Image (cartoon, rainbow, N blue to C red; front, side, top):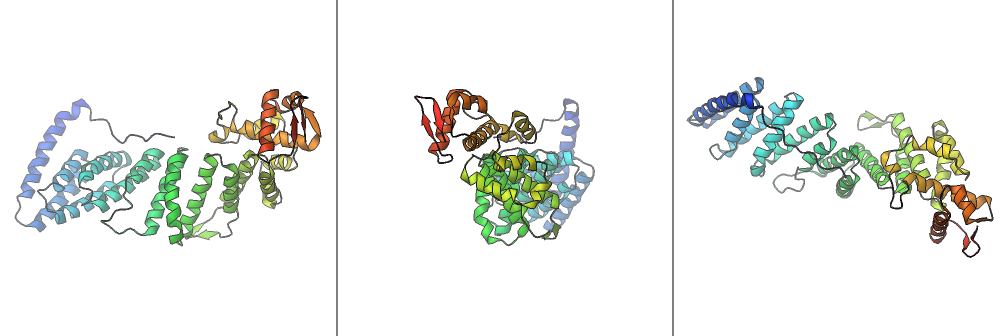
Length: 386
């Protein structure tokens, strides 16, 4: 699985350290003067004015220094919450790189007192995650968003909010092909799904679930999920139009996963469903679907062309040294051969499948044992009977 990207940023260049020290001194003096004001309301207004000033000047150090001050014990919680809330709003308005730097350090500053500033920290995490996602730092964005405590007893969170966050985190992990972490959040979402009627969230959940099954090489299950998605009849979901291209993409994914699924009766039933769907005739993969459906032996050239459109996990190497694609194609060609021949020598079967005689025998034995192919093996005579 992809590792979590670090959120720590490098320190400032040495040549600006002197400037920072002077800025720190000036900021500390200003904060001390405000803290000595008599009226609490006046102090809050002064803090907000100072925050506005340092934000407009793009003074990152000043913003963070002010934040450290207002969350300290010197400032009453009621006052500090108002200032921190405004701080979050100012951070959202910053340019992307500055946003990442300020939000990352602000979360670290607030984390020891997260119980008191839970809503503000959650808002910072949400905004930082979106900026990271825009820069395609998917895993880092997911990690930031996963830091939100969805089971907190300090604030009431509705099921739809929790579901939205779980699905969003899963989607971010999937962008980096991290199906393991994505699955943990989709499993959490599955318990929340019955509690919402939001169709957009329901569809996002189904897409994530299908992609996770695909990534985990549960191709037949993934094919069923993709096909269900391709059959959505609604064209407007929660005010957003469903793109016809997305439905065809889901249909093509269903075809791909079915072809990669273990050869046998269940795969054959799914192939029949897809072959009879008129929409499949418009897909570039349709000629291959037709050959697979009619149980024709696939040539190396046809398999290589199919491989060009596959995702990395669909070409991954398995424990026996072959790829996911190789295994699926060998099983398909073996099942197709069983329809053409009544019996075949294992050495001839190996040559037909492009593997050695022993491997061809093992694959045939496994498929017969699992009930995916009818046949017997005469090991003495080196013949397989179908």
